[in-house]
Amino acid sequence: MIIKSHTINDIKIAEVISDEMLIQSPEDGLDFMGNIYYQGYDKVILYEKNLNPEFFDLKTKIAGEILQKFSNYRIGLVIIGNFSKYESKSIKEFIFESNKMKHVNFVETLEKALVNFSN
Image (tube, rainbow, N blue to C red; front, side, top):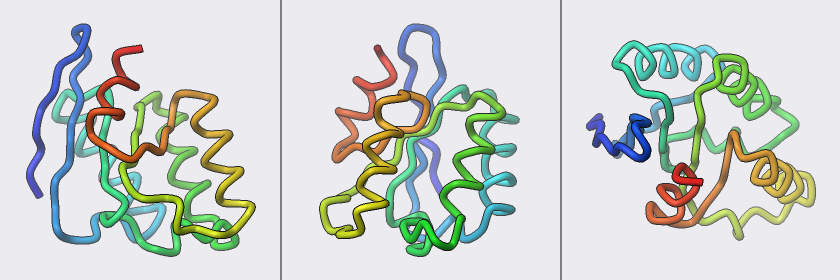
């Protein structure tokens, strides 16, 4: 795992780069978030491939539990990926609603993630 640091408006952003699945469970999400926070980052950019695929099956409740932890601790999160492949109406609505709230966002590119944090 490599953490590439970005700073926008004095906000430290961790772009996490890894070929491995980093978060498989809500517990992994909490450990991951604590690690990032301990290193002094305010926001996190993760890639879709670093999340358990079950994250995108809302019936498992993994997404809700993980994202609730990020919200509770006020650590912004952007997940980069191709979300058009998910055909479930519920995940599409979940992504839409998350993007409206601005604390957890789902975008297609790093550029969009960084723009998200600059607003």
